[in-house]
Length: 157
Image 1 (tube, rainbow, N blue to C red):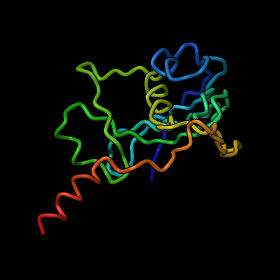
Image 2: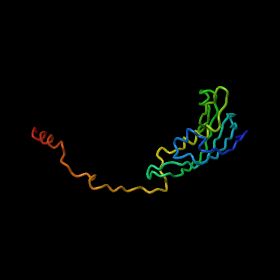
Image 3: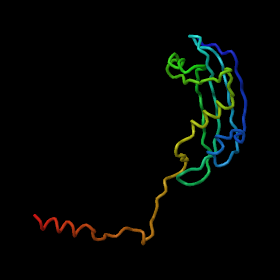
């Protein structure tokens, strides 16, 4: 049985997320999030981060701006020492708290959005481009520069 002790909901503008902002084409938009703090059946403290946003990215296929939908749900086990990581259940990521046991909730939301960014952003609604090369770029059959060496090798046999 999991009991949530506290839950916080909010909306943050993408302009207020400086580490995420550098990966976006522009910082227009917002992210809705929920942070739920509680303890699981074993008494381990956790925070569950839920975030939903449409991130403006640059499609690497068309080089046009598109909105990439992101919906994140991540449960993080709150630990104060790295040795506690092994006690976390499978599927729960560790979150090492500072020496005072404090954390900034908005940083958790920003971290999860950064992790949700695609390595190569491609708009799923775009179509693959077919390149037609000008005649001067079409590779012509040229003589092999190593043909003379092959001929020398054949002579030795």
